[in-house]
Length: 136
Image (tube, helix red, strand yellow):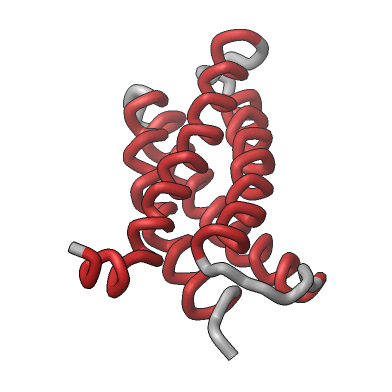
């Protein structure tokens, strides 16, 4: 068991942080669409989506850096910018999928948000591992 944890510890940590990040994203999104924004109004759907993205990406940057990839160096502006830029690319994927499946095809926004988050988590791990927090 210890060998498996040692070999795949980073992936396990990423999955845990990814779940927590998703929880931050979904909780924020659901709270906003239940209290302030109407997901049936396209612009309000996207505003709620972007706000949930900002909070979850900030949470993800800090926790991935500390707990997943265990970066010891002082936070670098270049690293943070890179992290956010890659996350913007997955935000575009998120927004496009929400637009297509919710706004155009009329699927349930809550269900589609969960499906989209799975895709985004996978893409974010790959970007973080190979481009943002790569070992020197």
